[in-house]
Length: 206
Image 1 (cartoon, rainbow, N blue to C red):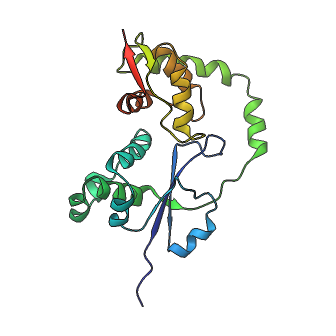
Image 2 (cartoon, one colour; image 1 turned 180 degrees about the vertical axis):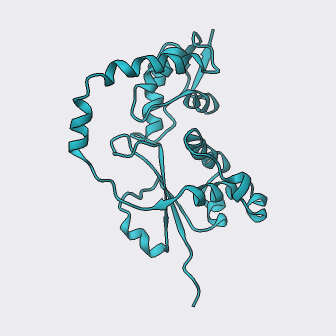
């Protein structure tokens, strides 16, 4: 009897969910087990093979998803990728990356008590202000460059990147945009500026 093929699911987290990362990566022992995941929607990436990824998703889309997590997770590609996956280009890279970081699915559980404790910690608010200014200074973009909106929000409404772009579009300069996006949970960064530039949604002026 043939072994079941693992199925991978990449969820684009909504800003209203309790997941603090832009995307969540899960692995299921078989396609049948997907019925236990009620969070899958039309924006989720669901596949079992590299070929399925190639049929349904472009290289640009997969690179954008991986880049959103690279700043938090080390890529396994240097030691884990097989010769076959390397030959598959970006799609093979994505397959190897998700296989390395995917975990068993667990539904989100809201913890009201924890939230209440966090709110009661008075030093939290003032402590967050200084790191934001430091991160803004490290951006590769001129902090004084003006932001000119040239297109509509290119992301799914309600997603983390959608909210990041909304904050970006309402900002006068790069420095203002970085500060506004850092204030969100989860926060945005200069990657959101680069993606918006690549999608033709904004321009940077002098």
